[in-house]
Image 1: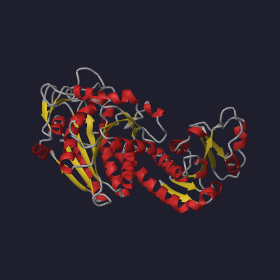
Image 2: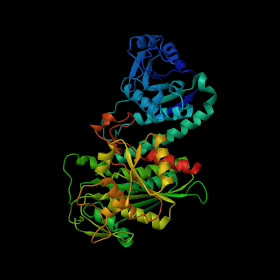
Image 3: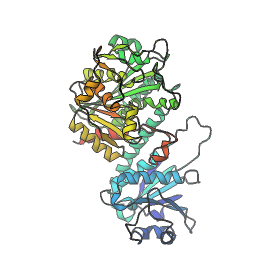
Image 4: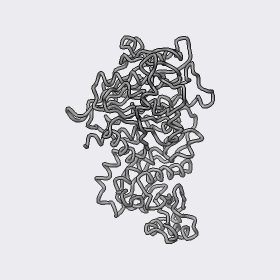
Length: 508
């Protein structure tokens, strides 16, 4: 999608569709918003009468299309809801709602009237960035395997008008950066949406190598023989039942400043999760191609680090395996020795994500001595039960790191909720025959006991765990409850959030 910034008024734009935001009237106040006058004039006097008839109310998700009587295309109003609940996330969702509403209806170009999306703490730069996010992410569809594709919006302009014309240079730079960030999410989604017969552990390693050449990253891939020499028994055990052998992939971004912070980002890359010997029910097992979403997010984060030239040094670690039942598969009751030397008692082969992460986390800490470690994983169904499919779970041992991630979450609209980690959870994962066990005999605090398990392998290094089992992807059922910029399938959750965190660390 091509995106540009223009000084002129939206009414003068030559786009097929001009879109403006409309706030809901407050309380019993039936008077139209002050901004309505400019929209009414631009639409040829069609919006004010519609407001009086209560055909347009400014409610969230309300998209109304007016055909301009002068024949210059369509004017679309999108509801922003109450002004006192307005945020950049409101703008992000509204932009996507417009893009989706006009898809397949002959519109190729779209102009947003910027000033109609600016209010209160949502200044012009924040509004412009959110419009870019919503438009680019909202237009996305995974079409690689489709024979025909329905066309939609291909060009977007942010019309500054007299209110923001003087900011053209600054806003153009803001928009250009946000385009890179949003398009990087699409790149990530495309990989995460690939089926398991294509996106094998070997294929993810190839993608990492390709990314290394593109972005100037150092990439190291450890195959099954090297993993055995290294003692990475966790990854080997989980991948033992598949004909596609596991891989540990490491990407290194050198950082934009000398002697800056080093941040390690570790991702769970289960390219397909059948549950192994502890096999899952057939219903919805097809969704387990998304169990690689954490590792794919790490690819997107490293790509963003290079594109944005963030200040910290960033190390990305992908723990890739396919969890299938087979002659070489690990079993309940097995004791697995990991890279750190610690042993895992396997009680459930479907609790495999933490087993591969045990090797990846310990490797990152031992080899790179990072200032902090962040892991991303579609780890537990308990996360979805606790927080739903829209909010990720955050567990952290470091207050500064947790606070930074929560600030980045608020800025990007990728919601996190911090959960506790106590000695109670640590006691629950202790094993009587090994160091830790990967499952419990009682269904208690599944998200938090998984986090307690992972903590074992990072030692004293400041660490944050992002359980993204819910928000990593949407289904046909859950899609209707999600923001319009989340299409069916992989969402790329965590890429914008952690990329923003890395930018903020550099600024600090």
